[in-house]
Amino acid sequence: MKSSEVHAYIHIKERLEELGWNISNPERNAAGQVYTQHECQKNPIIKKYLDRDVPENVVVVRANKFMVMEAKSEHKNLDQAKKEALEYADKLNSTKVLCPIATAIAGNPNDTFIVQNFYFKNGKWREIEVNHRVTKGFLSPEIAQRLVDADSSSIEDMQISDDVLFKKATRINEILHLGSINKYTRAKVMASLLLAMADDTRINIDNDAFILIQEINAKAQKILDKHGKGEFAKSIAILTPPTPDNHVKFRKAIVDTIQQLEDINIRSAMNSGTDILGRFYEVFLKYGNGAKEIGIVLTPRHITHFSANALRVGKTDSVFDPACGTGGFLVAAFDKVRKDCDGEELEEFKKKGLYGIEQEPEVVALALVNMIFRGDGKNNIQEGNCFADKHFKGIKMTRVLMNPPFALKKEDEKEYKFIDYALGKMATGGLLFVIIPSPVMFREKGFREWRKNMLRNHSLRAVIKLPEDLFYPVGVHTSGVIIEAGKPHDFDQDVLWASMDDGYRKQKSVMKSRKEGNIKNILEKIHAVLDHHSFKAVPRQWILQPIEQDKFIECAPEQYLEDIEMSKEDLLNGMRTVLTNALASHLFSL
Image (cartoon, rainbow, N blue to C red; front, side):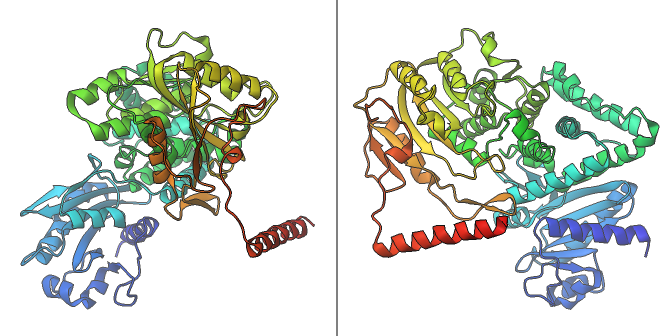
């Protein structure tokens, strides 16, 4: 057996394990899912149909539903791998469909692996598509099981888990670091690579560093030109190291990154509604200690989609984000409208429904890449400072979704200035959703006057206390605020005061979904208050009440939410917990 083939087997099992498959032999471990070569001969059903034939791997997708995998050590032998994989699968399907999925792999660790996936239905093999994109990497258990359950070669609305994405972003960050790629340029390298990988032809990774980078930049330019955004190509162009001695490790970093991206079917993932680039950017900034320095906090996907649903973004809206970053809120708005309509209506929304401003050229390019991967490169995302007020003159925005940079220094622009600017661009009756540090809604110095002035011209409809670890590792407590533009606040009108539990918990520096939370309930309450309907208060979760008309004009949920009456035992238990935590913290600091 060739050494390169052994490496291919190791690579396959590593990638399967990364994606969540249990790579144990099913004959030895009841939870195991992956047979390697002769191990499958112990399965009586596989043995019956394959006789003495042994594919590289047979993966158990469901009970008596398998995926066959066949690998070759060189790219040029991909067709042979495909031919053999389909032959093995056809044998298993000779009387009934036992093996609806077949995967062909060609390559080795030195020049990457090419992967093709096929699904068998109605006597024909078809390439597998996820989120309208042909897969080019290994299938996760979730994808494979959904394909089998739907009995289809194509599935939609398939998300990549944040855990997998975080691990992949962290691994790519390590690869780029080893390739001596500066921490502040890694995001633009990622943007160029993703654009280049969107092209129909595969990147020729056999070339030397100089030609490889030329090809990547040319492909990125081609995609941007196609979408009328060619001027941003310079902002994300990858520069070859000036010293030839660095070319080898630089080239290896680029090639290894391409492999990592293909492993997670990046084209499908980018078309899923996940702010992939935002997640990568967040990891790169975190490890470069850049996030705190520039006040950037990237809004989690479930919150951007919450905001679009809360404001009921629709096909006739003009959606605006004056500090759009990598475009997470615009992505959420686009995805909501795409689910609700298609055809000409969607095309019209692409052209006239999305508006964003971002002052960092590289970050603008990331936002454009995000939208291009959704089939939309014609949206109005502009580079510049929103306060210059030269953007989108004459357009009245009906929806604003935003999370302006947090004011971490005294000289920083205050968050409420972004709110004032956005409100000034809005049509009367339009709705604004903004995430701001909670003190803006209750602190006195400077902020109280802003609240008074805002309420003279606009209506506060809801304030939602957001989870404390939402923007970990940036330690800022935040609120989501909904304002109706152009209508002076009626102090007899009820406002929704709520506290969100999104179900996510911090685990090993990663936010993971652990329970359902109350997001759906809060969405219902937002829609109720916007429709002027009432509902029953739930202690510590939500309540309808007018703003208290005193000199403080406090607009924080904690001021209004009802507390739960606690028994003596509950109070004692709470005190014990506080004291225990305080003692532990003190001992840890010694």
